[in-house]
Length: 616
Image 1 (cartoon, rainbow, N blue to C red):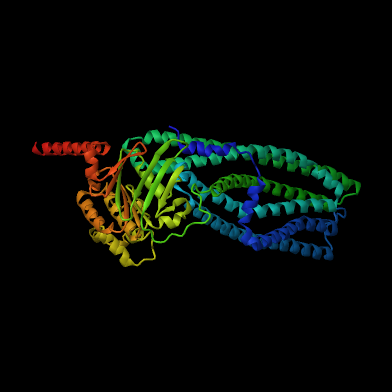
Image 2: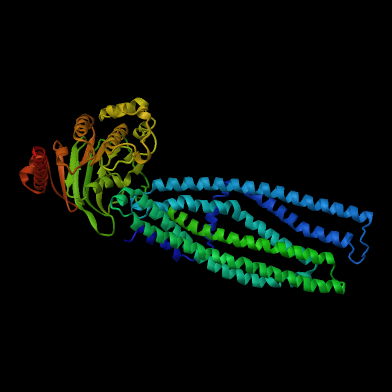
């Protein structure tokens, strides 16, 4: 079976950019608020680079000035002993100073990286909350979580250890080249003849690692998508005894990720020894040419020793840059994914000049509305109806008839393609969505509760109101008995997604949450389907009082729950086929009458079966 996270994550493989200047500039903007710290870090790295170069030069001075290889005396004069002691002390001081500066530089950039990532995570979360449900319909949550967590962590490594550290490595490289040219330009040119070999090896390495790293990130996103989907559906998986089958699928995805990592590691396993061999070749050239220069008297022994040390230090930044390349590659891939998310505009554009929204009267009008989730696969076809303020209207129909879609369009979760939807005469396209939703209460069949207490979930939409408003909302929907059974009262935790409560208890809290929100329009989408008969009667009685003065839209399969509706809309295959009161629709003998007859015939048969079983 194909999964959405397969194709979605594979899109990354097709992208080929190692370095994207546009992406890099966008990433650097997150360092803007911390530019002072970044500049200080660069200055510290420049100082560290000078100290790194000073060590070999001190060695050269010690050998050429105080150690006389040609003297053969074996005992140094007193002034030479003092000079060597001073140079040794200077060498130690250089090491200590370099350590201290590197410590402060690392701390500064680590702090900058964490602050930049804090800002980025906040921006991503705010953007995610601005997107409409249509975005999440097409993308698995696991993939989005990968972008918010792991991709952002990759960028943290870039900011904390990559951007400025690369400058430090470049400072050291150019500093070493400058020092070698200053000491002896001929020996420097001989030493640098190995650089073209290093450039070729690095180019091959970069090409290989680019492909392998993208494969690693792709497989990781695939694993996260698989885990998120299967952990959410764990009950279904266990019910159908599909553990072994799905474990094999995960094993295949996990093995793909492992193989991609192995290929990535193998490239490093080859590259590092190649760099070592090229470095050894450079030292061999120094010994050959420098040794000849010593014999010819044109090069000092100290210069040759300093060149050997410089050559060893020259290839360390090269190895560091190779590791940084992996970091940059990861950052480019991560930034592609993150900015793709941040560049995604909400499917419903904000109005240029939104109309002000006061307290709604609750008049709703659908005017020849057409809607499709994809292309022209119409879910609603030319739907028109009006709901007067304070009217209770029910929507019924078979599964897939478009009932829930009507409520989603009214809440501005999706954009309709044709027609108009008006509330109090104002076209929804000209109303700011947040202001509209502030006056609509929505209770779904599948209730979602957030981790926290009962009180926090009831007050979720309007935390500014007092505790007595929460108590009153719960009491109005008959939840007083529910609160009494909790040891901590309304401060009782509900668990993740309300896992510690029954489905009926969750729906009671959802009713209380919607009523605490004090909406002008109340939408109930199969809202009493999971409560027992006694609780349903209690809620229905409460709703009779609470719906006064509010427009209500009730979506129901159980027709017994909407017999008292002012008007019933009958949907069939995306079209509004009938509307009227319960009695009027029965008298027509149309779709509603058939639904009513089938439903009550089924209930009568079930009741007869139960009665027969009891007699036995």
